[in-house]
Length: 238
Image 1 (spheres, rainbow, N blue to C red):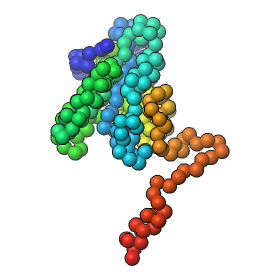
Image 2 (cartoon, rainbow, N blue to C red):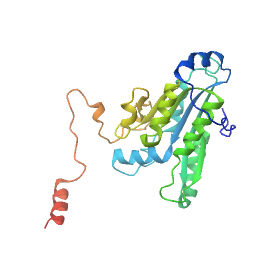
Image 3 (cartoon, helix red, strand yellow):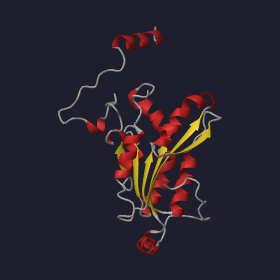
Image 4 (tube, rainbow, N blue to C red):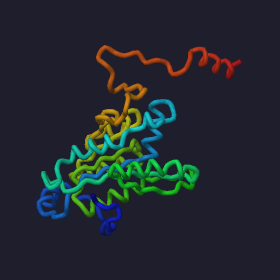
């Protein structure tokens, strides 16, 4: 597996222009790479949004199943131009959760993931730039054949991911369809709903997927009692 502390890319790195792709691929002697990057804060936050509750161990995605799906799409080492695979999880670590997150980090490492962990000192701390920096490093050191990004954050990822797709990388965004419109509507990115990854969840999530309704329709149950909703309105409008 590729080590996460590879040298920084050369200054001025940018994906090749369209006209240079074929020539670059024919002459490029760098090893090819399938890379997965996982935005842990974003996926956890959006999971809470789609199920309307705080995620538990039973409702969180299974990293071992996702590793199997990812590696299965890469092919055998040394065949079809695939030389290596790498999966990285990026996370902010609040001081009060240092102890409770230790087991989670060790479990990830045992499944073959590299973990980039950074202290979360402010509520608005984000790891998106760290993810983009690592993608840039890998795009400079390897021929990036496939990039799989687990994040629904189009604000920071849409433009650089589409730029890589134009340069010839197969870019796959995996997130929840409720929050990843930027990817599902893009002509350059491939979108996969995370629940469609085989085995990603031990049981179906309690969510409303308007993109996957049965042809005969479906009843969508209320998330709050009708009496409770009426009482809440009456308390605000006596």
